[in-house]
Image 1 (cartoon, rainbow, N blue to C red):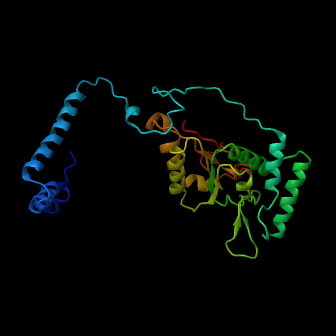
Image 2 (image 1 turned 180 degrees about the vertical axis):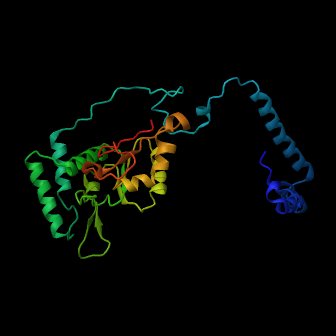
Image 3 (image 1 turned 180 degrees about the horizontal axis):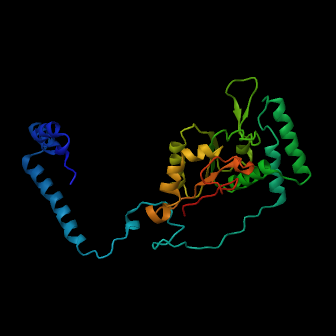
Length: 288
């Protein structure tokens, strides 16, 4: 049905004059004595028989299960029929002393001879005060949530616009030495010796490509927490095709499970600028 001669007649007249790749390669190998003509013909016949037998066997199949053809790293989560193996959620609470430890890491610079910005010193001091007073703000709560997962061996990956410092300059998950160029410190990776790695990276303004990458990363990493943060709604809009085409319809249309988490921090101010005007400040969309 897709006839290239309709639109590219001269090119495909030339193509039809060419020998096929298999014939050209076979003639070269036979001429060099690598294989015999008989061996080549036997291999072609053997492969043709494989195809013919498979075609004949396909007529016995009465029902097509598309999900059986898909390579998925999520076998521990779903049955062959696509149903969850369990709908129960284990306890996610942790001891207060563990939270305090993570909070103190968030308030520290765990690298010697590392000079941070003066303004950042005040922020870290404020975190230490909150921990001592058993209080918590948004940034510290997020730090404790990520840190507790890392401590349990669960990889956490966060990307998006200015996610390293945070869109409100509240996160500061990567510290920069004020005296040594490109010297950084990620305190989250100093929580425990046997913890999982924490990855945080500012993404470029190619949201469509970035979210597509993170979606693929999350698809191949079912036991990781993968997050992409759109700073404003207009950044979210640029990735909307990924959301509509692959995330929201991932289970039903593509028979794929995915745990990607989307964040939209400026929604808390009503400054979303997105066509989904009812989105809350943290948008959690799971294809599964």
